[in-house]
Amino acid sequence: MYELKISVKKIMGVCTSHPPCVPGDSFSVLDGDIRVPEGGSICMWALQSMLPVITPKERSIAEDPNQDWLWRVHHVQCPDPEGRVIYKLERKGKIDKSMRSVEKVEDKITASHEVTPFDLSERINGLRNLRVVVEEVQGTCTSEMVKGDFFLLQGGRIYIPHQRHFCLYALHSVLPLLPAKQRPLKDGDWLKEDNHVICPDPAGNVVMRIEILP
Image 1 (cartoon, rainbow, N blue to C red):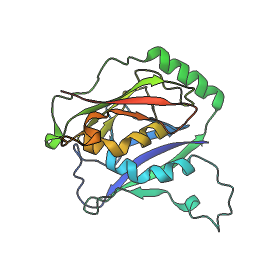
Image 2 (image 1 turned 120 degrees about the vertical axis):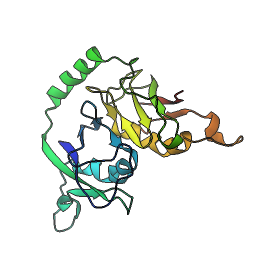
Image 3 (image 1 turned 180 degrees about the horizontal axis):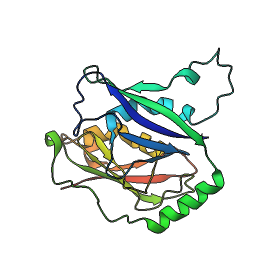
């Protein structure tokens, strides 16, 4: 497994995200965990486009390079043809599993789950601000997420607290629902009342709750 750094390389158009992406914006993926530098965020739409590439880029690929295209792909772009934010995916070295265990224990010690470190007083384009929080872990989470872990969504931007992480795969499972949950829904739509999502790992069973913030 490799640690990945994913950063904005260039913008070939106009990024309509709020705030707009700028070259140098970055986040990391470490053993399936997403981490964001202090004060940073991730564009929800760009993340959905690059998710299929992130998982194999974390890993050593045994297939002959002449038979597989992924080894030579180092850039991914957002889905907006008017914005075309280009991201670079860089391997930062192999992961020492023993050090990862130490880091995750330190995460638990320093976590402050009830603090919202971001200013959510503004609604971007009238969209509701959301908080996705781990409500319970019914099995064994290999990402070692715990009750109270969370991320925030404001407009199209995902915010993960500094020095915390959120599981890439759990986040992937909840992402498709979030744009709808940001908007008023009609009575009778199941998504209006249903606020829970479970991660895809049947041995982990991490249950997440989507909260609409005032």
